[in-house]
Image (cartoon, rainbow, N blue to C red; front, side, top):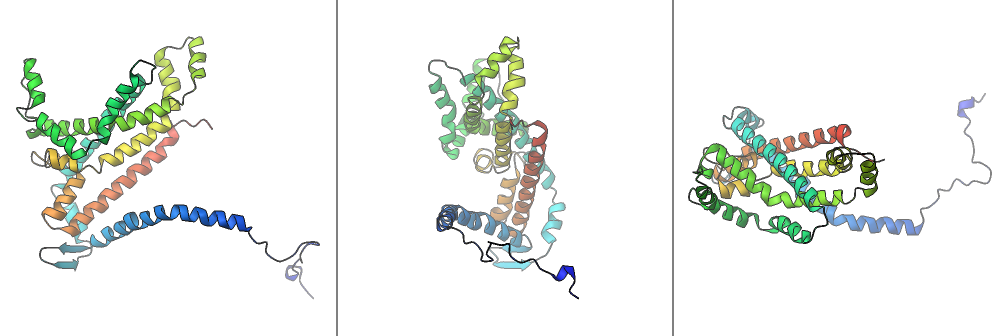
Length: 314
């Protein structure tokens, strides 16, 4: 006797078992899409995934280029990382630099965007003026600021006109870190300013008019309408700024060389120093893996926290 489960239903009347083929124009559009993303995909594989895999591979080795040795050492570089007495000061300097950069950069960029989002005469010239440092070479920008921040440089010259003796900015711990943060803020604040400007110009004017009819003050307009509606852009700029702050190298190398002492030695400068000055490429690779994990964790935390403060109209 045949069981009910063994009876397979046949094709419905009028339907065929032959698989319907995808139309030719759909396949053609799909191949066109693949060709468009192919250069970007190839770039990600060659310049992101392959270097990332090599860094992880090198972190398990001790590679001295001068001695021409390449030895598998397992987790010895990780053990060296935890026993490194300079690692905590380096991470502290990295955290201070990142926090100072994010706070000053985003606050100043938002303030400039609000001020320049008005229909004043000559406002385009001011927007160009504040954005122009973004397109200037970082090394040239840093060298000029290095001259200005010398003990007998332009900044202390201006302070002396006011009867104030300025510090030796680049040779004092707090002064050097403050100088590095300020130079980096002025370099890239124009980029975030433009992004905030684009977000502000997308806020519907009807919302402000309706709130003013209800008697809302300018402060209430800013906190209840402007900030919520541009919160997606604030999240984007904060992620970009934090990731960028953890990748700074040329600014420190030209301005302070990590000094005085190691007070301005951030993580990227330290790993380059270990790899190319001390020829410890294995340990430098381990520091690079640590930097990757820090960036990954901070990005995931920011992405999860967006549910609490980022406003989406839909």
